[in-house]
Length: 169
Image 1: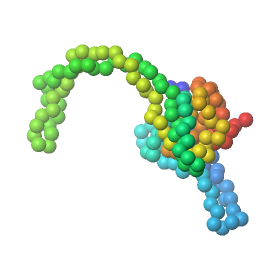
Image 2 (image 1 turned 90 degrees about the vertical axis):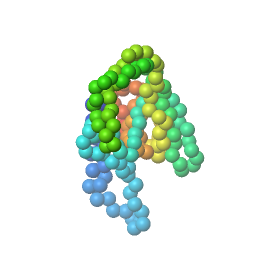
Image 3 (image 1 turned 45 degrees about the vertical axis):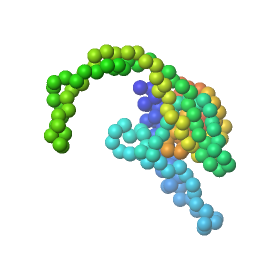
Image 4 (image 1 turned 180 degrees about the vertical axis):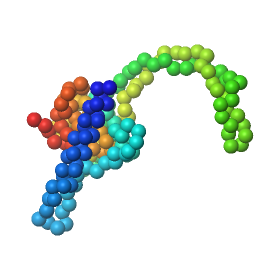
């Protein structure tokens, strides 16, 4: 629950920052120059906290650069968790759906469970290197698309150390 509130607060702050940049009416000296600020998709509906472009979060285990000017792959520390999963199933005689071809789909019930250990860490994710200045393994990171939206010095810390690549004091 605490992580969900942290994400919600971060989304509100992030949208406020982006709105401020757009509303500032900044004029550039060079007509061909453009402001390059992070663009991301915040969908309506659902929990509204995930982007359709993808995202990830967790404790950083490794930063793997792809080359000069290219995205950096962020790898996450393994989170091994015990889960109870169904090991054996049995089809019942209770029809739950009729397919378009007229065949029936029957309900399935679990006959035997087993406890397994699975890694629940997010998959490695590519991030624009401009948002990773000063970021190192052991820090907790939230990523939306290719933007590191926030980084905490340690997992569980209340205040982020960086937001959109800018260190907070």
